[in-house]
Amino acid sequence: KAGVTQTPRYLIKTRGQQVTLSCSPISGHRSVSWYQQTPGQGLQFLFEYFSETQRNKGNFPGRFSGRQFSNSRSEMNVSTLELGDSALYLCASSLDGTPYEQYFGPGTRLTVT
Amino acid sequence: GENVEQHPSTLSVQEGDSAVIKCTYSDSASNYFPWYKQELGKRPQLIIDIRSNVGEKKDQRIAVTLNKTAKHFSLHITETQPEDSAVYFCAASIGVTALIFGKGTTLSVSS
Image (cartoon, rainbow over all chains, first blue to last red):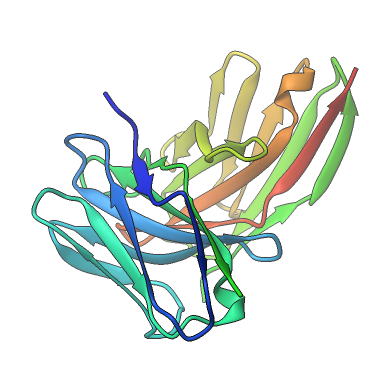
């Protein structure tokens, strides 16, 4: 089975712009979670989707949003980018909507200048 | 809010020694505790996990122990090798949908 894939892998944006990141889960997996990874804060939970529904959201501002499609692919969007949004954005998929056995994608490295 | 504390933040050992990383969680409802290994420039990889109905789990040189009463769990790596050098993250389940991660431990194994 192919693993979790994310596109694009690298992105450079300017403050104030918006960005959309994409995540394709392992075939058959129905849950997608998104995390922000920074050197100082580690892995921080953004949100989780299951069957096109956001079931849980971390402590991030409303500029961070996401959605999931009927094929379980997910996108996250960050509007009005700030310098502090520079990070590695990771998605992880799991089979049945539980947090058990989450498998990560390679991440999208976002740099905001 | 829910929190996972991980210690130490850095750990240096000689090849062949054992390494232990400890985590404490705050949510008494947490019932799933995975450990991830992240090598430089790569994605986090699930290396072992434990559920709350089990006190210990082993997989070759890696073991995890869980003390639900004290709300802490630990990763034990025996006979460390240079390829064990990486950042290790512990996590605890929050509700039925999410994981909360510790801030990571950088393990360096010198030969």
